[in-house]
Amino acid sequence: MTAYLDNNATTRVAPEVLAAMLPFFTENFGNASSTHAFGAQVAPALKGARQAVQALIGAEFDHEVIFTSGGTESNATAILSALETQAPRDEIIASAVEHPAVLGFCQHLEKTGRAKIHVIPVSEAGDLDRAAYEAALSERTAIVSIMWANNETGKLFPVSELSARANSVGALFHSDAVQAAGKIALDVKQTAVDMLSLSGHKLHGPKGVGALYVKKGAKFSALLRGGKQERGRRAGTENAPGIVGLGVAAKLALEADHARVAALRDRLQRGLTEAIPAVAINGAGARLPNTLNIAFACADSEALLHKLDKVGVAASSGSACSSGAIEPSHVLRAMRVPALYLQGALRFSLSRETVDAEIDAVLQHLPAIVASVREKSPLWAELCKKTA
Image (cartoon, rainbow, N blue to C red; front, top):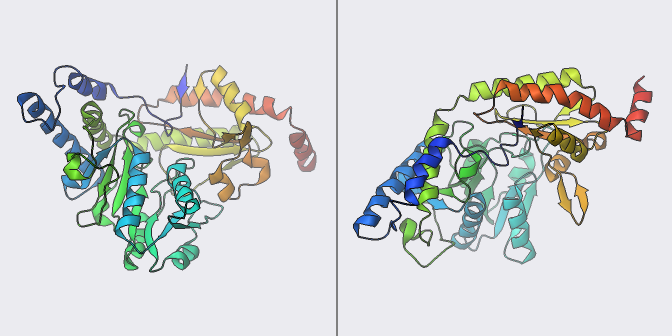
């Protein structure tokens, strides 16, 4: 039995999504901007997809949805737009646990002198330091970019409250909702969110397509200019097959049984904590229903993943390979995860396609794998002596 539990990295394209996309590579291949019949076949499909994304995030108007190439482009567009339209405001606020598509981009903007960034710390549980957030807000703040849900731990952020405070000082608020969209109910109408990013391949849609929500009335400056596509807000011929696929994926996501996924995740967590000693749950509390970040003391995550892969289980760690060295996740470091656990964290991320047998496979193999990896760790032997 193979088990794919790395859905926060990417999901399988749903069969219904693929079936909807195929005609737009063949029969309905026209350019949506063309006035002839071939183009006329495509334009209504793009509108339908736009309305599907509108429904997924609870937007008031379908024209508030701009199609992009994915979350990274959407994030960059939102941040650069705010810096341009909010001038002379030149400060950005982001959390210490943002995805590199936000955090790394903001750091680049600061390094090149285009903006100043305030990086807000989080608690050991992954919650935003609200006092630090309040202190960073000022008349210089152009935009606040806080993710709706963390990609590594699944931790949820109080976007409604944070966006209201940002707006109260005249700043725009953007949320990277790439991990949240399709996994929890979203309703941007009930928030002060000005812009929101999502990506198709995180919710059983295709790669290379995403969307940026821009609230009606919010100041906006396009990143890609030239053509008049997307009401002049994103130039370039529309990726019709991808957009259609995203629309179908959005519709399917609204029908997903998140409670079932959460129950599977909880069974996995319970089974592992009962079977394996010295484990810690990172980001426990309000989190996505599909995500479990669990750390094993004195165990190397890369070794664990390698052994899991050999038995057909796909998971991930938050570690990054830089200059040939494995570096611990910036998210877990920001959460001050103890050194004994920091290198041994694994992320299991489920989807609506996950079945009981996949959870069974992890519970069957991982306890023995952790034990075998710990046998080679002098730190584990020392820890056992201390607790004996």
